[in-house]
Amino acid sequence: MYDYDYEYEDGLSLLDLMKVSFGTNKKARIRFGIVLLAMAVITYLAIGVIYNGRKVDYTANFQYQIPSLIEKENNEGVVSSVSYLDGTPFNVNSLTTLSHLKEVKDSNPEFSNIDVETMYEKTHIKASYNSSNEYQYSISARERYFSSEGQAKKFINALLQLPLTVSSKLVDSIDNSVFINQATEAGNSLVYEINTLINQATYITETYETLVATMALENKTKVSIDGNVVEISALKVDADNKLQDLSISLYLTEVESKHYVRNYSSQEVKDELTTIYNNYLAESSELQKKIDNYNSMIQAGAILNANYENYVKCMDRKIIVDHQVEVYEGFVNHGVESAEFEARLANAVSTLRSITDDLTKVQKSIYKDSSNAIYFAKNNIVEETGDINIFIVIVAALVLGVIVAAIVNLIMGYSKFKEEKFQKLDTKKEETKTENE
Image 1: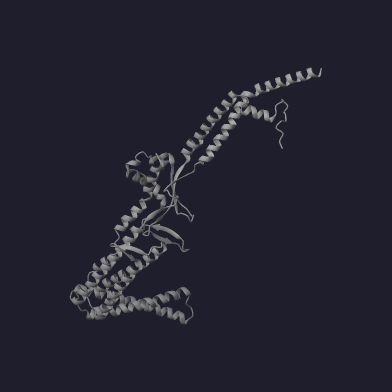
Image 2: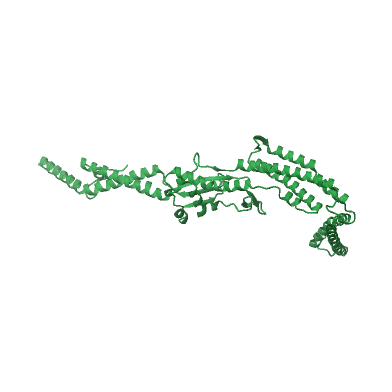
C-alpha cells in the first residue's frame, strides 16, 4: 500500500501535493473548476467539432439488385465484368465522376449549396467494391460539404439511383424482335427467312430459361403482368407450348422437300439459286479432297491429334454442305412458287411476333419491379464514419481538464502552501521546545 504521508526532500508529501492540486481554499477550488471547465470545453470543441467535422464521412454500405445487368465469367467461373443491356460497362466507381455529381446537384434545388467540384477535386467522395459478404459496395462523402445529415442522405440516395435510372431507360428500349426483323428483310430467300425465325424461337426459349434461373437466385418466382401476378415458370411453359404448336422448323422441312421458292419465275432469282448451288458444290468437292488426304494419313498411321480433329470437322461440315447441295439442286431444277405456303408463313411470323412481345412485357416487368439499391446502414441510408466516439471525447475532455486544472493550481499554490506548512512546523517545534523546558 502506498504511503501518502511519505514526505519528499522538500518536506511535502504526496497527499500535500494532491491537496494543493485540487485547491486548499475556496479561491483555489474556484480556479480549479474554471480551468477544468475551460479546458474541457476547448478539448471538446477541438476534437468533437473541429477534428470530427473535418474527418467525418457519411457512408452508405449497399448492394445493387439489377437483374438486367449482364455478368460475364472468366475461365475460373469468377465474374470478370458486368455491363448494362447495351453492353456499357457497369462500374460503381463511375458514380463519383464529376459529371454524375453535377447531374445529381442540378436535379434538386436543395443541393445547390453542395460544392461538388471541390468534393471531387479533393477526393472527398469515394465509391468502392467490398469483398465482405454483408454488402457489395460502399460510398463515402465528407460531412462538411452538407448542411445536415438529411441533405447527405438525399444526395447520396440520388447518386445511387443513377444506375437504376440508366437500367430503366435501357429496359424501356428492349427489343427482342431482332431476328424477326431480319427475317422479314430476307428478300427472296425463304430458307434464310425460316432459319432466322428458328433463331428467334431459340432465343425466346433461352431468354425465358435465363429469367427463371436468375429470379430463382433472388427468391422471386412471380411477376405482375397486366395487373395479374403470374409464376415466371408458368409463362415459360406457356411460351414453350406456343412455340411447339408453331413448329417453325417444319416450315423449313416443307420448303426443302417441296422446293418452294419465292418469285421463282424471276431469272434473277434463278441465277442467284444457281450461284449458291455451285458454291456449295465447289465446297463439297474441296472438303472431299481434304477428307481423302486425311484418310491416306490414317491408313499410313501418320495422322496427328490436331489433324484428326480437323478431319472430324471436315466430315461434319461435309454432311451439312452435301445436304445443301441436294436442297439447292431441287430449288434450281424444280423450284415452284406457293402463295398458300407464304400466307401460312406470314401467319407464323405474326404468331412468333406475339410470343416475342409477351416475352418483352415479362422482361420489362421483372427488370423494373426487381431493380433497387439495398442499404445496410441499419435503419438509415447513411451513417457517420471516421469520427471519434462522442463518449470518448467527453471523457477525454474531462480528464484533460482535471489534469490541466491540477497543474495550474499546483504552480500557483505550491510555494504558498509549502511556506505555510513550514511555518506551522516551525511554530509546532517552538511550542514543543518550550514545553520540554
